[in-house]
Length: 119
Image 1: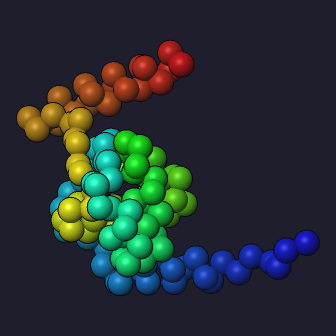
Image 2: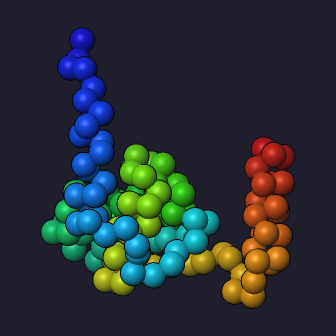
């Protein structure tokens, strides 16, 4: 059997991954679709393990929520890393959310939920 899991390691890691930052450089909606840019894989190798893993995941279009789930990083941590990668040109942001307001955004989320229920 493997070694017992030490929960203290999980408490430190997210803070270390984002270098203490808790707020992203830009607000990215959870449903936003992200795709790796042409040079993302090569450049992300030098940006750290987590950013490299995100770049590989985004070779196929992924939402912020999917990136968080597949990379097994907390959503807040993923949001900070992804925002950095968008700012650095490693990821292209395609937001499906309307820019108008709360009502339009809720309509979009309801349509997504309805579609998921039909699956």
